[in-house]
Image (tube, rainbow, N blue to C red; front, side, top):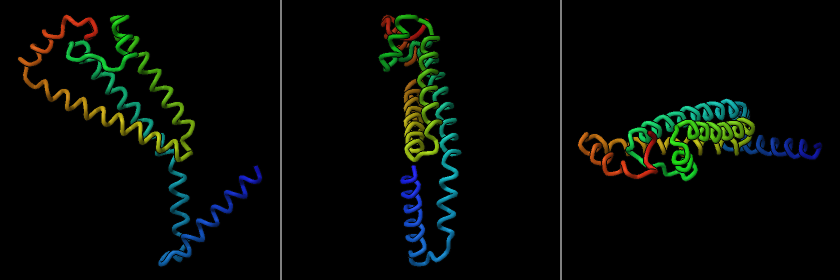
Length: 163
């Protein structure tokens, strides 16, 4: 433990000397800016986790809406199995809630570490990408006749939608 504290102190001194010896950086403002950035990491991760929850709920709502309207087939094999086996939205909701809860708990636990922040940004990026994909997917259904054609063509598939 003492060895780790010594290593941290040496790293801090090295960082301070680099900032103070840099041309035009003869003040300690750089050090305080680094400390402020480190202090705000847990808060940023918590905000990102809240974004993950909001985007996940939005993804679930849109998924359930399209499944009920028979406008899509679930691509996730676990979710597709839950839908086909139960014909109910509740197992899908429970599965989604469990996976998001595990993700949120892990990210909250590592919120003080750089890896936790990077993972949170990645998760938000993936879910934001999914939101853009949903927007693109829904743009294909602007024509009501097209909706009816798709729904009628796919209504015989047992993997499609919820009752």
